[in-house]
Amino acid sequence: MTWNIRPPRAEDQEMLADIYLSVRRQTFVWVDPGKFHREDFSAHTNGETIFVCDHADGGLAGFLSLWPEDDFIHMLYIRPEFQGLGAGTALLQALPEWPQHKYRLKCLVKNRRAKAFYLSRGFAVTGNGASPEGDYEELSFHPV
Image (cartoon, rainbow, N blue to C red; front, side, top):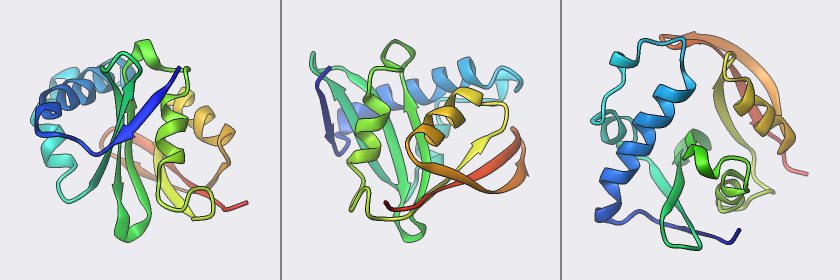
């Protein structure tokens, strides 16, 4: 598939909020789905740099949010029908100075599929902690 990575447009906001809400509810099955809301997207990405991934047909496949001051990948969410097709990798590769730059993120321990994705892209476990959604591991990307 061909992916286009770009900044978000005003008309993307509803779809981005939908992706964030639906993927969280589908993935974090151990959390009460009532704790997730559409408004969470704008609140949780406030001040972050968003990268949007379009598929060749023009629809949104997913997004990545980055807190640039800390080189912290806050979120990477891909619609289920596009998972495993390269959209997440395309978003990572669109990060400034990728792969020469060190980025980090937190991944919930129970989110085994996401952890496997990051480990296969060159991230390594460098720490751990706890959050309201469960225990997490900090993963860091070390430049090659």
